Image (cartoon, rainbow, N blue to C red; front, side):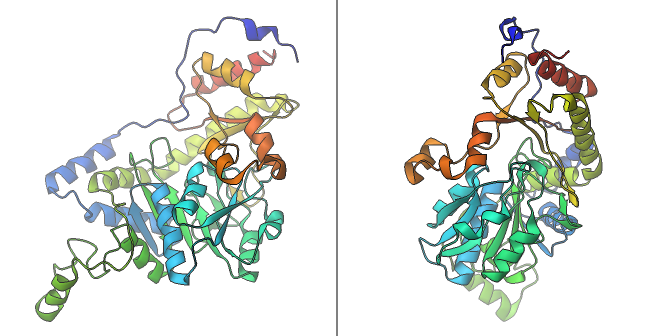
Length: 404
């Protein structure tokens, strides 16, 4: 398709990022309280943040660690340890997701097996799961990509039939729901990210949620060097005396698993709690921005595929994906970047150099992933965007296609 507009000089740059963060009064107040307390390590704010986050996701437990990647890492490690899985056992992951989802499988000395995604939702296609299973399959990691829940009923049904564990990668979809159930509450463990530009921001950080108290203990131990659960916090001996105190003292440096240092501080927890208490306006702003983008671009449906929201699912629009139906994305992406609108590819994974080296060319077996790798990207949809920003984004996309 010939577009003379491509050759026009870019207009004045307007910096619109895919994400942002601004300290508000509540975040600053809570941070001042942390400083006044002189408590930096795991403490009151961390406990409050974990409890509130777990409740918001209909879970009994939440464990706050230093990233969503770390949450995924210890989730798989905890299940591998609990079930006695062997090195080389397999985990099903979608062929379109952030690279960390597959990396943590390798880091746990297991093997990721890729399942292609649905062409409308970009989430794992449940109808393909059984075709990718082998006698060594142990778990499934469905990803709630860009704020939209995966199709969990058939995934959970297949997992139950084949006795597979399920880790929900909800790093991009806190507070999203599927069939009235919160993401992170349907599988054995749910994992979330609170990295900069995510829905809830702590700077760095992540959480693992579960309704299984034994898994919660394992998760907390694994993020704390694999330490004996009798002493996972400096507060754990505060009320102890006599024989109990002596037992704790004897086991303070007892390690029962090969763990990691994935802990976070009270500073991140304070910011996270402040953000968590403002979930409703954050979600409302993101959904309104998504509505405005959809309305402004709906007549481009012959050339663009915009986000879908299946019945019964609540999309929280951490990001706004756009896919060109029949052409490479680079022309449009470069057009937007030249005009100060930041973009990102839609989570390319199987085409990345390291995964080609490890697994060969997987794209022929994953045609939807191949299409998204070639033609899909996303824009920001965050709460700091104003209506003028959204109008500008729409104008620049429409201008590219010559539809003013």
